[in-house]
Image (cartoon, rainbow, N blue to C red; front, top):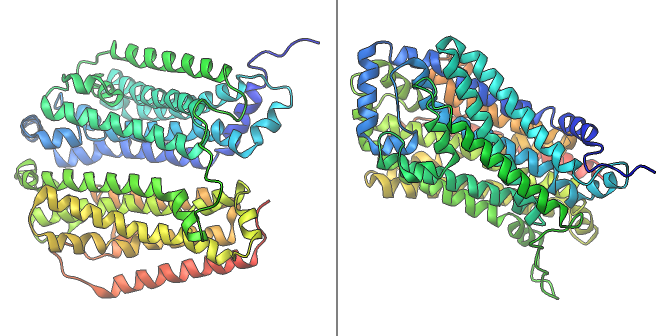
Length: 526
């Protein structure tokens, strides 16, 4: 009998991975591409003359806070403005997509037991890891192609370097996730640790960019996101920076393969610690908190720090916008017309509300993960009803959303230091719309569990795109009203409108109630 190659079955596993991700990955790719490709038109409207672009360049070079948030600006061309405005965040999204893909098709498969079943067939030892990395490479390659083709009109070389930079950033964190997946026994921990590395990369880049105006700080060069900036698309491209990405991907990839060869299937180098001999969790709600506390704490810290950063930027918002009427109009469309400072605060609070919708979807979908993994079945075999079991996770989802928005308000209070009461009210008024998105996720889980994950993410991402890109593109009112966030009062500065708030809150209750009713009646997934 011919011995199996370590890569035997890679093609089959890759096709299977792409089939499983046929909805979620294209959604994330589309979001990233649309975010990038919608920006040139917006920036052309905002900064249509050379004088306006030169003034923006001067403002960015003298404003450390905005460099920390967005990055340095290297040139006044429309392509360079696009790479500056969305480069860091497109890189973050490519990295997040990649780490989720790799962890899902490595550690998630082992944790669920599917990898052991697959390994019993004609599958090589390295096939699963290779297929996961190739799936991430396909996703990043599509992003690179879309960005390169869409921005080619701004300059072929700049478009190619930007597309390759985004793909390379994604692959750096794909291989990081591949290493972490070998070290940990839990997919949840693998995602959390890789996300922490991504967060550290953003912090390093922000610290470096705030210190220097040209991205030349040592701290910036320690971050792959800083490498993306220093590739300088549309601004005398530094092609040699791609060698840093290649070296990181190659080195981390080899390390991941070496670690995978030295461990047993399902095991890890840092196994989970055994629990106490007697249980300490007395209820389903306590178990839900134990499972989700790391996620809640991580989001809480992130929102507090975001509030500090956005609050610190508020004083400089007027200087950055200057006399640019188009930029002022976008802030007013996002945050109301009660003055530039209030409009800026309202738009930043609204952005955090949109991101909080992603948290609530993540937390609600934990129910689906527990059910499909088989962990919910033994719990429900005890005297625990489905509603009690679900209530624990949903409490964390909906109350947790309120917690992170309150911590965002605390961050604004630290960073801005003025008008603390109105900012708290502005953060809390986002909750009804956040809860509506969560209610949709509960409804989908209750009535269509097999499709709830991609559909829920689709709803959340659609709300994010409408709220973020819609005002910049001056989208018509009916389009903005498709998002629940489009019906909220613009606070601080605007008048409080209790009618839409009460309506959205009631709608969230109805959606969640319908989802729980569906959960009581349907069969559990085996």
